Image (cartoon, rainbow, N blue to C red; front, top):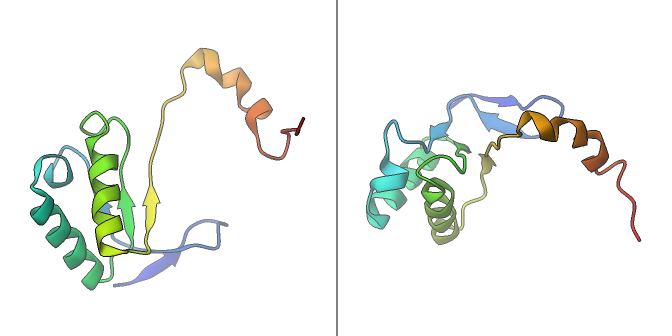
Length: 103
């Protein structure tokens, strides 16, 4: 499996990622044994990047993937996404860790 740098993060990820969404649905609807077998096989083949989101199966993807990765004691990269509503966009600079202050 080929790998690449992920932007300027210093992380190295496989060129192929494992999608945990509804299209295949395994991580959402598969049995725990099926999920574990699929993730373990992907890792054997060199996949170290797993893509998920809270909207995949109403959170089931993130929960189930977390259980599998814990069971396998996996050290992989997980990408997840979230949505900001237009009225939240003005708050992004104020939530930056570089701009936060401690009380």
